[in-house]
Amino acid sequence: MARQYTKRKRAQKEQQTRDAIARAAMELHEELGPAQTTISAIAKRAGVQRLTVYRHFPDERDLFAACSSLYDELNPSPDPSDWLDSDDPETRLRTGLSEIYDYYDRTEPMLSKVYRDLELKPVLNDSMDDVGQYFEEVLRVLTEPWTSSGPGDRFIVAAIGHATHFMTWRSLVRFQGLSNEEAIDLMVSLVKSARSSEIAIEG
Image 1: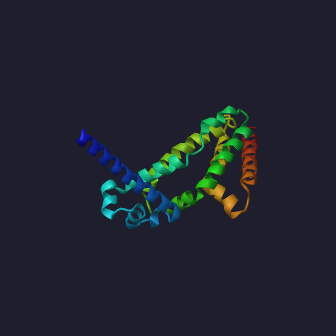
Image 2: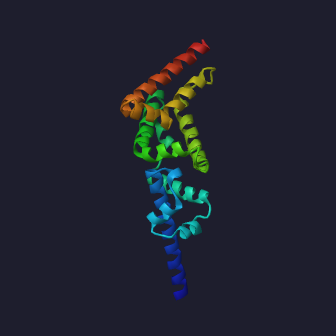
Image 3: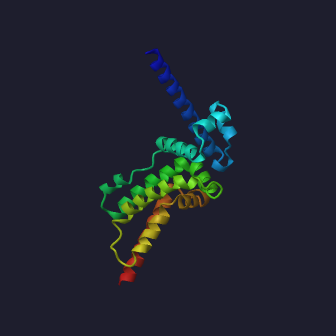
């Protein structure tokens, strides 16, 4: 019985150390960016030795996966299925953009550095694959009420894809000084214009 208790306590301590390392990496990625975060800095933040970091995460991909998983747990993305309650195209689009832009507002420190460092840290593309799958679902849900399988649908898909991208939000809100609400109004107008282009092409 004592041996089992000791093993269980040891396993708990190991998990706590692993969690502390993942949290330290996450915090440094948000503060400095993945490309500027060193193993030494992670070890210092987590209160462990560098070799301890390597023991728990011998592969950089494992460390990034643990960091991403923790960040997603603490900062869940909006659920596109919640937007299906509305069949009205504009209402659904405004609801989706509102939740996505609020999410970008909260997570900008991390997202801006991840996008900045993509070329410097190819391993980040693994986590971006999950982001891509998520936004495929976002695009499907938001475009469905607008499209009609006509030749102009690609304009609507392009407009909504542009509207939901982090860089679009950042340009409009951070660089152009719009509020989230103003940015949403502008993007809805863009999609309506794309819809008009579709009608003109089909006509």
